[in-house]
Image (cartoon, rainbow, N blue to C red):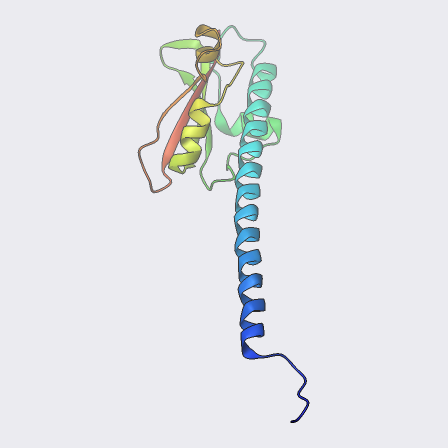
Length: 154
C-alpha cells in the first residue's frame, strides 16, 4: 500500500461549504450595517436641516421665505439622501409658521421605519403627546419611490 498525502474531494467540499456559510452570514451582517448607517445618516441630516432652517429663518415670524437652494447651501448639506432620493424643504400650505421636510426615494421598509420613528421635535409627535411618530407618508410603492413628510414649526 502506498502512503498518499493530501486531501480528499469530500474534505475539500466540506471546507467550501463551511466557507460559503460564513460568507452568506457576513453578507447579511454587512447589509444590516449598511441599512443602519443610511438610517442614521438621514436622521442626522434631518436634524441639521431643522436646526439650520430655524437659525436662518429665526428673524421671520413664519417660514414663507424658505428656499431649498439657499437653505441647503447655507447649512452646507446636500439635498441628496443616502437612498438616491432627495430632501426637500417646503412651507406647509395650511400654516406658514410650519415647514415640511420631505425624504424621497425610500424603499417600502425604510419608508415604514421613518413614518413610525419618533421625530420628537415634529408637530405630529408633539400634538399626539408622543404616541405617534410625527411623520406621514404612503409606503405602498415597492419600487423605492416612497416619500416621508415630517412637519416642524409651531
